[in-house]
Image 1 (cartoon, rainbow over the protein chains, first blue to last red):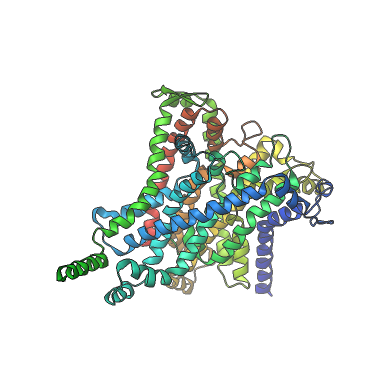
Image 2: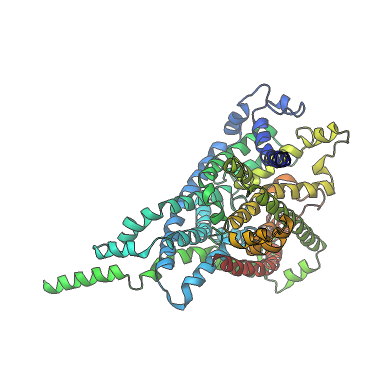
Amino acid sequence: MKPRLHRIALYTTIVAILAIALFPFWWMIDESLKQPVEIFSGANLYPHHPTMSNYSQLFNDYHFGSYLENSILVVTVTVFVSLVLGTLAAYSLARFNLRLGLNQSALVVALLVRMIPAILLVIPLYLMLARWGLLNTRIGLIIIYTGINTSFVIWMMQSFLAEIPRDIEEAAMVDGDTRLSALRRVVLPLAAPGLAATAIFSVIATYNDFLIALSLTSTPAAQTVPVGVSTLIGKIQIQVGPMAAAGVIGALPIVIFALIVQRHFVRGLTLGAVK
Amino acid sequence: MAQATVKRRRVRAARASLPGGPYLLLVPAMVALALVSLWPLYYGVRASLTHYLYGRDFGSAGLDNYRRIWSDPYFHQAMSTTAKYVVIVVTCETLLGLGLALLVSREIRFASPIRVGLILPMTIAPVVAGVMWRLIYDSGIGVTDPLFQAFGFSAPEVLANNTSAFIAVCVVDIWEWTPLVFLIVLAGLQSLPQEPLEAARVDGAGRVRLFFDHTLPLLAPVLLVAIVLRTIDAIGTFDQIYVLTQGGPGVSTQLISIYAYNTAFQFSQYGLAAAMLIALLAMVALLMIAAVRLMKRVAV
């Protein structure tokens, strides 16, 4: 009897905690499907007259098409470029004994760059881009994000590549492959799951960034989705329905991606320190 | 002819062994890193020593910006608000994350979907988390006011009152980031050596004794990594606050990040803002060094 009570208490606690973790998601979806009248008529836990009007309003009146387009473009280019740069560097660090203790110090530098809070960077970055004439451009955002994300790729890929036995590529090189073709033909396919996880984490981090995009862009020509979400919060009143809909659009792709890589989450968060 | 073949062979051999190549592979990435670390650091230090008026560079200011923030009561206020915020959220997240990990690490059903559900909050953008909780807190649309009224209290109008607004932004942080501590600790728990725990259990140690004498010390390095990572991140908290309160009401939720941001982008005082951030960097740098050392030790 006692162990059974114990289990009931355990599951009740878990369900309660899950409810707290997930309720805000439901409430946002709920609000995004309500008409204004219903939003202001008390806390209904599900929409009585569901409507998509908030979503269409978002794209018709609030430039959400451009925010989404900017986000997709910036994220795609950033992730691609930083994966190339970071993986090459990671390969060098994982396979060669470099001089001057570079193997260690390059990783430490990457780690430090990864950890710098964005707020410490935005003011100098703003002044830099202003001087280069790249404020409020997508290419400006891409350059900055690529730099930041490369640090992450180096760490993740170094840890994934180090797990692949050297013998395999050495065998390929005996068979006539060059270093780089062995990397492309033999090593990368083996590292593909790690590469995919790294790519998805990079997408999440880049798509989710708010502060850098907020500081470096000023119009829908370059603003990204998270900045777009914040424009719906005026000084005096907020556009509740569209804001909830924007939040859903901001969260949806990320939640899907996160579900794909959840197995690798710990490594991604601690940069390989805990696996 | 023969010479050309030899040459070609040599080239191929050179390619295979990649002399100097390992360094060449590193260069583009290191340039990219420098672009977002060394270069901004240089710009930031220089801006902090420059006098700006209406956003325009008006020449060298010496240490004036640093003197001004030193005697600025709002800067001190923002620093102490940040310190309070960081201590509260990191403490709560550590305790809750640890408790949650211990709860879920046992043999339970549906372990995998439960774990996914629990980590969902930390995957979304902090801005979106801010939006979610704004929809919960706001009077007229939210659920907190009706909830309090249902239990016979008056509507708290959470975001309109100094103390409750501060608690409210802390709750959002705890909601979003407890999962991070939870996940890291869970991974740590699962990789703990089982033998000493078994031995202690055979010796008749109770659950509580077992936890404090054996599990916790073994877990400490992993837990420390989680704490330091969270602390660094919490110091830079900006996004949710910007969406929820913009630092208000008054200055009750004005963290250093919000104050520095406003100083730069509302009042165009780039020099002052840069000085604030350099001061903050000095503190964060120590934590980052600690983090690097801890993570190395855990990784081994």
